[in-house]
Amino acid sequence: DAKTTQPTSMDCAEGRAANLPCNHSTISGNEYVYWYRQIHSQGPQYIIHGLKNNETNEMASLIITEDRKSSTLILPHATLRDTAVYYCIAFVYGGSQGNLIFGKGTKLSVKP
Amino acid sequence: KAGVTQTPRYLIKTRGQQVTLSCSPISGHRSVSWYQQTPGQGLQFLFEYFSETQRNKGNFPGRFSGRQFSNSRSEMNVSTLELGDSALYLCASTQFSDGGNEAFFGQGTRLTVV
Image (cartoon, rainbow over all chains, first blue to last red; front, side, top):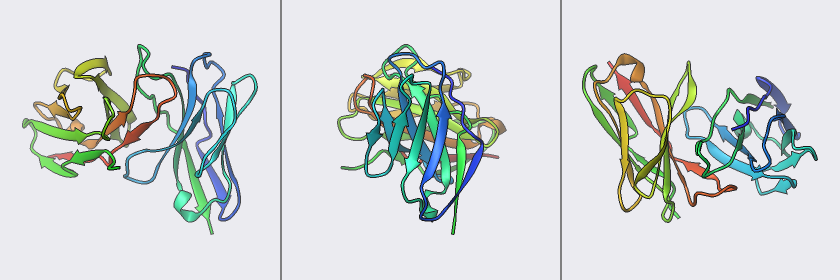
């Protein structure tokens, strides 16, 4: 699975958009970009995933660059409850390495 | 529909004992993965089961084992517990073994070894 690089921490003002970047320059053609978040001491929560096209759901938007070497997770109106560690993972399920590899993630702090 | 259920939520064991943790995946999900999370090492993959077969295994000693039943429920066992096994153990279920499928995690079992 491709390695991803994320900033260690970020701050965001409540009500503003939070833009979390992720670099995955070695991603292979069949690997999806997944985003999860983990609020303290809870299980990771799935947010969104995509392959090539930008994706949007009720939680967030995922913008993937045309060359697929980086992506940005956008939380459009961050709330205090969005404070969590956000993980970006490049992964293809069902392959020989069928497991998510979690890095250190980005600790997002949403401030009032 | 119900989410991933892990039992028990908290457990305290003595060094040298063994422990069994249980995971009930989301109905219809055939793949179950186990992860260990510690402050020092973060989230680390233990193993994955699909249709009662272990398909992938992480880099953990043989004291860590698991199995999956015909109803997709899974158990993991840790024998001869060490202090360093204290961690949050997380289970995730996925519907199908193909790209683009998301994994759903349970709330975890927090194991403390004393």
